[in-house]
Length: 192
Image 1 (cartoon, one colour):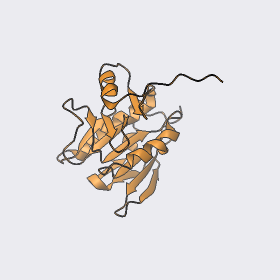
Image 2: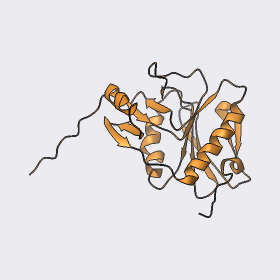
Image 3: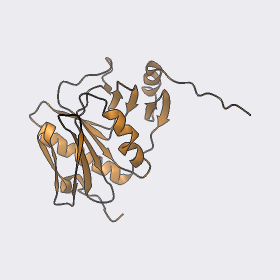
Image 4: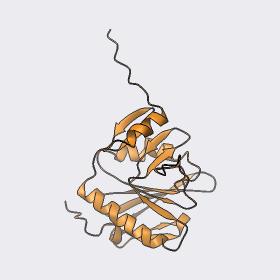
């Protein structure tokens, strides 16, 4: 029986050194770099709309919104990810002086695609839940105006609420922000 070659596992330092030189984005999962695919037109449009709406909602607060180029380190598991958008409620904490790897996200947003939906709902969410700062998770569909909102309760349980339709709004309790789905889906062809 032939043995398969072992893939070298990267240390966090090796990963960050290579990632900071790379033109493509990669997540680090169990010591392996996994290249992230490009986002679709509608994924990009939804993400841009979301960031604009969050910026307006957080104006004048201590909250700060970051886009998909901000890497997150899930410290308990050593995983590095790139959420579509995120909010920090308190002073941002970074892994090092490069200020490109955040340690304390409060709210994380993922725009679902066919290739990432299972990962975003499952393993990725499981890892995010190990972060003490993480209190809300929002999954946004591309094909219809619909968002799933998970919120951590005081006892550690996660409660799901869903909103659908362009007339609906999503409430983010931890940052006192209400987002209209009509704003998030502005300019998105839902018939595409």
